Image (tube, rainbow, N blue to C red; front, top):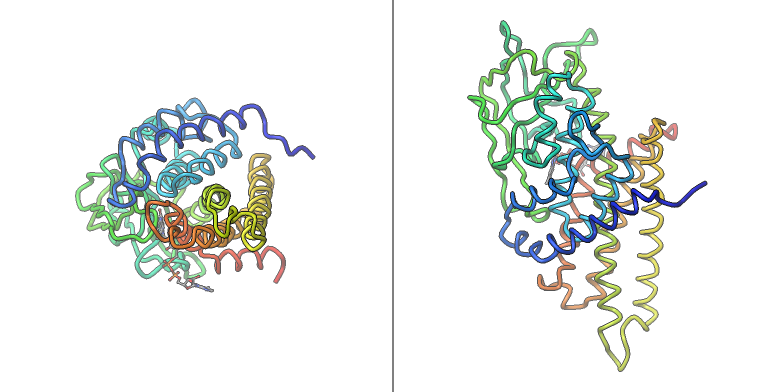
Length: 382
Ligand SMILES: Cc1cc2nc3c(=O)[nH]c(=O)nc-3n(C[C@H](O)[C@H](O)[C@H](O)COP(=O)(O)OP(=O)(O)OC[C@H]3O[C@@H](n4cnc5c(N)ncnc54)[C@H](O)[C@@H]3O)c2cc1C
């Protein structure tokens, strides 16, 4: 066994940490307060190579291994969940399906701009009446001549309504299977296509500086070549995309837990009560010890899942475990971190309350904690 990171992975951690502290930390609270998605910051993240991290060089990606990508998401999340969401969704949900399932033409058309961070792409799966039950989607795509005609709507779609958004991948019913169940396909829809509307969603409790959208498709016509892979592959593509996406949500949990812990440890060493730093009280020290232990466990579990993926070994069970565990660890750590800050923990200027809020999405997005437990219980033979 080898627990050491490679020189390249260590370098990624160092550089992304430096970037996050310099460029994101000073404005994260303000963007959160204003509920503002920053194009400038997104472009800067593109400039240092945070998009297309696992995409090969022929499409102008960074050609890195999966652990490097996960480390980058972790380091951004250590400072700010919203920017980490832009990166995680940009890579796993926006770029990933096009890279893994797209035709050569689609990859050459879209990936270079997406990998440079000049453009963003959304992944539209969730619908108002179909969340955990993704097989209950109602959006349809009917082939008329040489065009797909799409009708329906999607909700909560990350990176889908910014000025940088180039388009979305939409999962739609394209027929009926022999079993009588709907057949799903994924179709690429460019921004600006007539009948396609992306409306930003506001007043979120968390990830307030991330772009979230409702999508409407009203007789949207796209060329039949815009289908991703083969007709009927949509459900499989969606499941494979979510397996990889779980690792990046896990990385957000891990990084967010580390960020909240960093703040709590610093505060506990500085804050004095009864004539000594509160870190000297066993009740506080034990909380921090538990946090340190759980973060270590989450990191090992998540990195193992990434290692399995990088080695083309089955990783789906470990991805579900890593996502579930890391997101719940962040919840416990953020809770302890606020508690350790006392009343100041409830004030925005101390930042720790942002971690407390941002954590909650991680137990809901890309498969709720309940859904992860269903996935894991199936793998262990229940
Ligand atoms: C900020 C944000 C960004 C998002 N980004 C995207 C995106 O980019 N693309 C995208 O497609 N989606 C996205 N989502 C949607 C997200 O993936 C869904 O919210 C999530 O899958 C849950 O679906 P739901 O909200 O409809 O909840 P529901 O599925 O209605 O679940 C409600 C509750 O019922 C429980 N439940 C449901 N079914 C079961 C079951 N079988 N057994 C036990 N309990 C169950 C759930 O665990 C949950 O507690 C995003 C969501 C948010 C909030």
